[in-house]
Length: 574
Image (cartoon, rainbow, N blue to C red; front, top):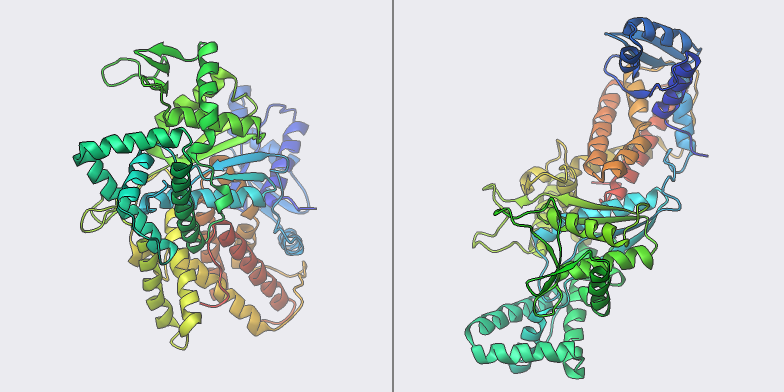
């Protein structure tokens, strides 16, 4: 059975004390404090509602909290400070060590979440704009799964539209054999796409033939469909290669393209029209919203079916939403998509609610994120002004990491050096992204993200490796905890930080913000460093030595688990 966190246990204790005082509506708010182990808030609000002096009520609360393992006191205008005994903290440490899950429960058991993330386009190379969705989505998937949830990964790739008729027609007229790696093959395909677009824009006769090819594709012409399937397969192999390089859990089986919903689109339109959720407007079928208007003040609709009878991505998103609720039995839908799509998802979710496809029991969240910026403060581009290819960005990160690793470990060479550089370089890219509040833009700075100091992935990897090295020097000793010893302040601080791991994951999930886990791991590493500097481990005598080794082991395990949940390697040597 998972041992609850100290903050959670204290919240229950404070609530029970409030109930004994007749405070039926008291809301216990227990948090860490600079002046004590914890602070209980809520007395001020209760005193105001009862028109009583806060400090008098706080004093009554302190009296009700009197216990052998807890020291309570009144602070400030009516706060209650809470300090735990050394025995209580050491007992909690022992409980955490005995729990393979480090005190993390499984509150998501029985909850099915569909996470839509990454979303590249067929026949186009992935670029820096795909980085955030892919990394944030992967971290949320890992955390949801770790908390016991059922997670359905969805990579909603763009694999349908008029551009494919253009590309297939150009390939037929300008055949180029595929060769080389998936990355080389994809670069060839992307180049063909650009050439086809240029030809389409400048050659009216080719444009006619390309449109005819679109009709053939939509009509199921065998040769055209086979060519389209080859393009999709070639792109999917490339995406898988990039995902493997990034170390994310997306696979080819998770890719469900826009084309998968084609057969459902007429029914989507008919259903919306029958319910009068969507109405005809200038030849199109649209959904209107009272609060959504354009710059001119006119209503800005969600276009379900275009004037020419075709369907856009709004209809596809509605079909996907309905399928995920009805067929996948989702309890929660997460869309990890750029913040610029906020209005679109607001309209899609509202339409789904009005149509009855998104019932009240199902939550739908647009997990919006900001932009990756270059040194000039603008969206990250190459010197030539082109979008930065994701493969190039990762290659540069690993190359820079190789220099950092080689400087720290001159004896490391060959395949071992390459693997360590990959772990550090990819980890640095991912951590720099995840450590930033997802709604904010951030500047891509490879030099800063590979620093051995500060809030970087490398710093956390180094802290983890140092702990594993220390434990190796200690030998294969049983990790036991003696609850009768006296703790140093640095030991107390470390136990309290370690105990906050489970609560941190709960906060991450409540807000869908992985940066909260990054911040926690960075603070934990700093607290461990202070402990290591002030409290000798290997030179201490037992039982203090054993207790401190237990602290080291739990810190190493917590850093390893936390980094793994972020999708970042935690090597034992650096």
